[in-house]
Amino acid sequence: MGEGPTASVLIVDDNVEFQSTVADLASLANCTVTRATSVREARRIVRDRQFDLLVLDLDLPDGSGLDLLDEIDLVTLGQIAVVTGHPSVDSAIRAVRLPIVDYLVKPLAADALNRLFERARLHARALPPGAGEFSGMIGQSAQMKALFDRIERVARHDMTVFIHGESGTGKELVARAVHDRSGRRGEFVALNCGAVAPDLLSSQLFGHERGAFTGASQSHAGFFERAEGGTLFLDEITEMPAALQVYLLRVLETRTLTRVGGSREIPVDVRVIAATNRDPGAAVSSGSLRGDLYYRLADFPIELVPLRERPEDVAPLAQRFLDRLNERYGTRRFLTAEVLRQWTARPWPGNVRELRHVVQRAYVLATDDAIAEQGEPPPAAIARDDGSVTFQVGMTFDEIEREMLLKTLAHHGNNKRQAARTLGITTKTIYNRLLRYRSLGLIGDEQLGTEEDD
Image (cartoon, rainbow, N blue to C red; front, side, top):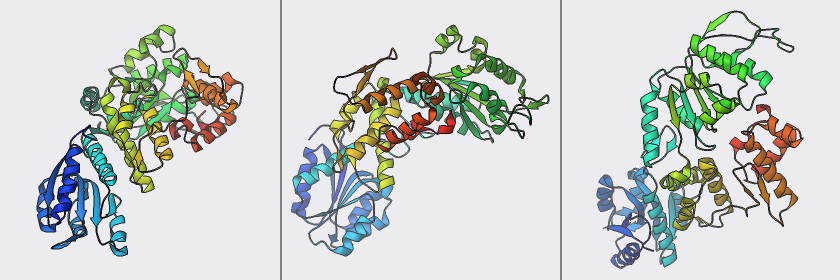
């Protein structure tokens, strides 16, 4: 029981024998213990200190333990366990109205106490509120601290930013952070260049005039104009057709654009941030990214480190994802030290996105509050970096179909239209399959997208 970080425990109980029993077990569980015998004494202690676990008796000499909870900032506490030898309906109802409270009846079993201590250690291991958090991103590794510093430095400079990182590393989050800290008053507008048909991308990006093409019944402002005074994020820039790359370069140089079918030059004040999951040098060499455009976009390059190279970020990220699930569903589930050890040792080819999905599946499959299993379905196939999929004997046709579809989508940057062409099916079929996979907890919302994305 002594493994893991040291947690701080406050025991508030006027029964000295009970205090000693809990304190002895807490010490064996690698927890430091502070004791109080009254509401007044506990109030004085929690005023200046934070604790990972509060064990609080209901019946104290100077009032109910619940009175203490009405007076203190619950944010300063991790887990709270209310204990009593005289349970009542009123006290139970009052206690469970607080989502972080456990209501336990004396005498307490050692197993119940050890579960509380394990939660306390995990709370101690997770990031405290605000620590290691930067514009919605979580990270305490040296790599993430360096990333936060680079974002802070470039945000208020009017430079284009080029973000390179594997899928699932959070490229859009980084782009949003740059925008949020830039002071620009306009909107943050995002466009995935691979999710729009090439013949429609110019209209979506630069807008069109009425009558520019069949169906253009009215003028349309593109993404550039929508981002006026703000930031335009161009994800998967290497999927943009070469002809449009030439025009994009011109817009960046002149800070003006001409809508499709128009002749009037429209000035634009837009900061552009581009991103790709491909190696920029290889993309330039292969011709999928023009060299002159790349150097214009890369005024300030940012490379994102994959999750496998910063394992110390796995635990706080997993805890954050679980906190959101607990808040959404009103539960109090927690991650065991063993499952965190397993997750920290994984290679995470899908990075933070994959970790979030694993936490979601583990949450759904958990049979009690303690999440001790990784929560993954048995591996149906092994995807290799060369773009192939190895199928195993005994797989069902549904498993084969799912792995082939998801692998093909990943190969095409989640572009349903291109994946449909490769597989010889319709985008509607792909979308319907993804809807079913999401309902089973096999993919998340960002993989589903919308049918209209393509």
